[in-house]
Image (cartoon, rainbow, N blue to C red; front, side, top):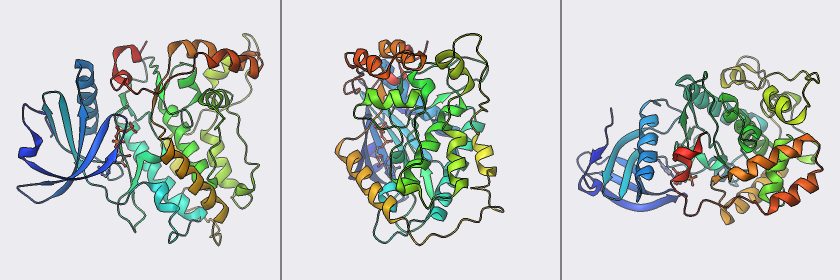
Length: 369
Ligand code: ATP
């Protein structure tokens, strides 16, 4: 069981090698444990403030509970002055989307089910531990090796313990993948991750981002009304089962419809809850015994689209936002009769800013009500 070593420099125990990744909060290096020669990854996070430290402590605490083959494994942790370091299992295959756009990779609907199945297995385990990941997006899905098909979910920096009996609201997320209840500052839950899993699936199958607008505000407005379709040519060859799978998770939940779209007293249309990860694994599209997905020759159009998607993300890394509370107070207007353009005009001034200097905010106490 990993306990944080205080006042110890990780370089006494691990030899740092090349940098392998960088996020909003941390820089990740390849490293080697001196005593065993084991190759690992070291994520360094600056913790100038007390709350920054608490955030990393929370991440470590959560990762301790998440021992599963589909999830990145924690190996060691350090606090050394204003820097904390977590030593992680090294994952060498790179990001999933980088992998699937490779010329050598044959992308088919079947291969998408192989990845989606593993993502759901990972999320199922996270949820079974009463934890929400809250930052499910393509760059947090890594391939174990350069040639195999096994994936791992990474980055528990925004994850939270979740008590289904208690109301939990958060003010962060990545606009293209975030669920409407986050944008609306409504109650979140297991379904919040499932929405993002569905959006990842949509992008994987088509290379298109279902809610992307010209601005983040427009993207979030599209999210709040769950405005998406399968009309693009990229979906022509995609099975109905795959589309049904997406629709069963990328849907507005009853509570949000009640609060945001319908006026009091109106009957609710019949919307079931989003599928849980466990239900996803039993869905006909993913179920081992039932799935008989035609092996399409190749999804060339999807691959071209995915290349553009990856290029765009690399140019403008889409790190989590800390939303301004004010924009949450206004966004529900979009669903309640205000013309979208009017709402958007009033939102521009409140556009949430990327959390350049807010490394600590996602975990600060005001991230919760
Ligand atoms: P974000 O800005 O998305 O919150 P972060 O600062 O929390 O990111 P991570 O997402 O954990 O940092 O790591 C940044 C990048 O480093 C990842 O996108 C990934 O490419 C790489 N990376 C992280 N952990 C590992 C690992 N264990 N093995 C290999 N690469 C890793």
